[in-house]
Image (cartoon, rainbow, N blue to C red; front, side, top):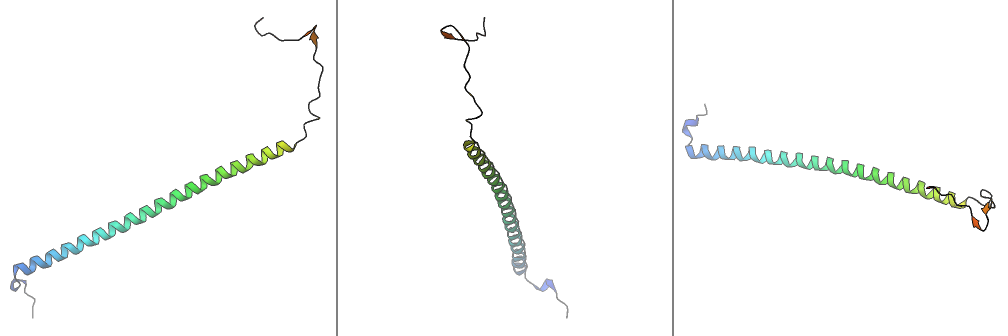
Length: 100
């Protein structure tokens, strides 16, 4: 027995065609939504990796600076700078005039 489409009414064929087009459109929308979610997730993952890397770099710089400042503050500088008597020209200290 052969299937004969000429026996099917036109309205039934239109209905089946409409359902097929609707299924294709629904599949397209689902795939597009899935692709959008994947791209959004990849973008968010990339952004979080970049942001966390930058934050780690900034915290590392701040920690290094803090260690440098603490180390510099703990150094004894009393022996480095000996007071020297300044030569004077009478009652006024020597002044270097750049313009003259």
